[in-house]
Length: 49
Image 1 (spheres, rainbow, N blue to C red):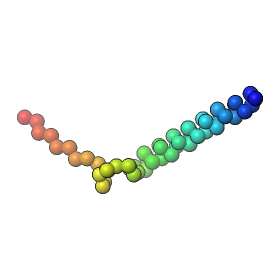
Image 2 (tube, rainbow, N blue to C red):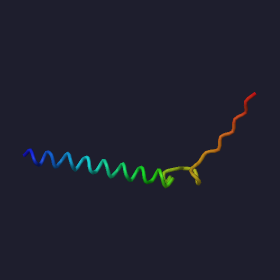
Image 3 (tube, rainbow, N blue to C red):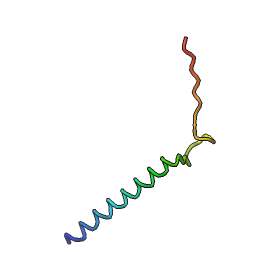
Image 4 (tube, one colour):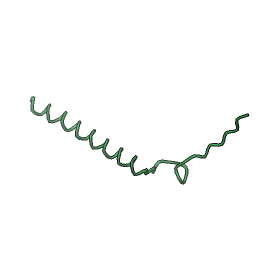
């Protein structure tokens, strides 16, 4: 019983670690598949008087 609990938590940490690696890889590659803008950026204009 104790062995299966340890295996469960190890599996959870492995899944979280893989999700983090995928997330960071997409951030480094600058892939924005969920953006509504075509190029993924916003242009901001400000006028200070």
